[in-house]
Length: 537
Image 1: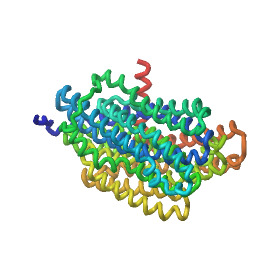
Image 2: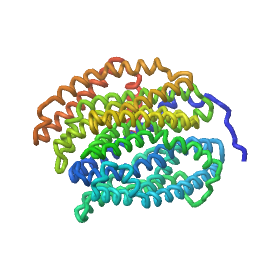
Image 3: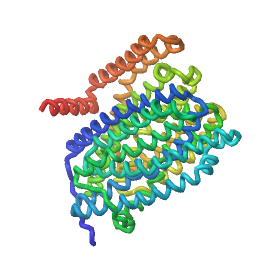
Image 4: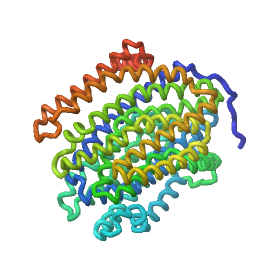
């Protein structure tokens, strides 16, 4: 069957497109905020129950293995490979053909990931031996890590199916349900940790089971949304379907391209196994990084891909360039103050929320130092996703893959050097610096591909943001220096000072942007006004 084509057109207006992206990103961000809050509560509970103990280290090493494969097979690569192809089918072909593509992709993914899951369970002892060299001399710890890995491997299957469902819904401009799916994941983990773990000889096993059940819940809760859109998943094994084959061509290099963060974190976890508490410190530090990253960075990247794919399919490169520039400016507008705030308030945040139960003051210091290392690259973790989505919308997954391989090499080299100087903190810093290199290279290549990324507009935006950060830096640095954060108790007073730091910094930051007549602030205010008006209708 010949593929129908659409002649290049200018498409929708850039203003209308950015408004649509902002609405979608706001919706995803709000849903993700709910999920991240619940995830934050989950992390506090796990820190309270297990601290940075041997059981916690075993769990986070074991969780890293299916989590890496999840990123490879599921969230990043699946969306980047599926959405451009499905968008083209949905825009230029019949609904029946689009539905056949979905069924073929579903059954192919189910078959492939089932095989990988079974192989992973069988090969878990070898995988743990390779990925946790620091545990070779601890037979009991090695056995616990292997058992947890085997228990959690089915999570990969369920979360992969959930990612495909998310890709379908996002391509159809339905963002809220997929963004809320992790809420059910976090609820399952919390319930199993609190209600089941006290009755087990090894309490940490309950958390592993909760991970698997939570992955299943993420998939099941999206099925009603698919049904509402008219798509019913059914068995139609057709791996040679032209659309599936094209997805495969896009998927293979994007396995590395979008998963570079998880790959680098896996490398960090492997090397952190040499330091007691290292895997746990890195995990909690990255969880705090993922809070602003998921709420806005990933939300913007998710919302922007369908629009980028539409522009690319129409050959509208001017609109594509403007959309990428808008995405980067809005990401920097939110992520840069979040980055500076985390760097300055790292100890107060960890001390107040995590330093309870089995989580000690020593663990606070270890996690805070790791958070500082990761925070250096927070802006890069967020912006490289926008850049990668631009390449994927052009159905070019090869370039991001090559750059990602280079980034992994940089991370390995920096990790081996910095860990000798800064222990686990050096591993976090290496990951942050590698992300910066990755982003700068991608931006340079994409700028040449699109004949510029409107650098003057982006530079003016960064200058305004830099000025607006000054009151934030002063207030956060002052409050973070209080001796209060080394003292026991006084929870209400600490909470009040922390919220004063966050609230006062936000007021100062947005106030400076208002004085500078910031385009980004004006756009955000317009988006909020429209949401308020719509809610009153």
